[in-house]
Image 1 (tube, rainbow, N blue to C red):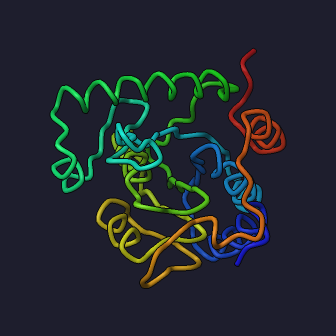
Image 2 (cartoon, rainbow, N blue to C red):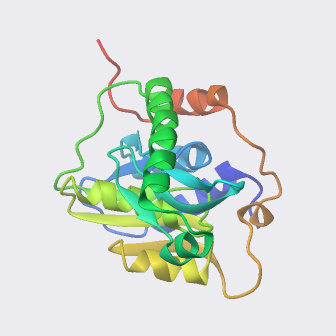
Image 3 (cartoon, rainbow, N blue to C red):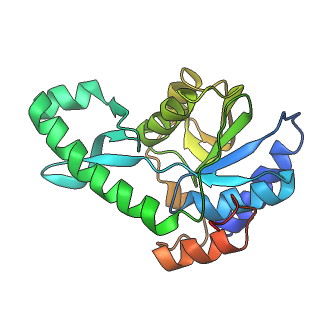
Length: 215
């Protein structure tokens, strides 16, 4: 159990500090991954940047997702669920385009400077936990296209199935609390797990090692 996201970030950063890194850069997934990414960036003395994938919502149940899309348009689908709910390619593309509009809004809102080029560097992708893992997969695939030396996923908590799913995508998955079975909820691993506003995310970003601001 973690007190809050910052506590989880500090504990995760201690674990990551045991590894050897080559020019590490931390990519946090907003909103919940930002406080965690800040703690890791401080500990590793690494720059922090953002990667902003988003869940593709099921039309009749937007809290559920059938996949995810990354800022570059990379789409990851839960094929079994897509087949189950009967979405065709046109419907998938329409939903993905709507979600990309929100992704671009967040990029405009959060971006303080030019993005970091991860080519040839060790990339650490962080969030406050994994649920299905498809959003993280979209982030990993998008970052891998940019030629990093390796991509490591680091999260405080996850179900075993999602860890295994990400192990097929990333070079390594580091997770402090892996739930072996039963119903999983990220929030259940935190004493305090409030929704974060854009303002709170920006405040956190302002305290971190970030890409240089625009001149």
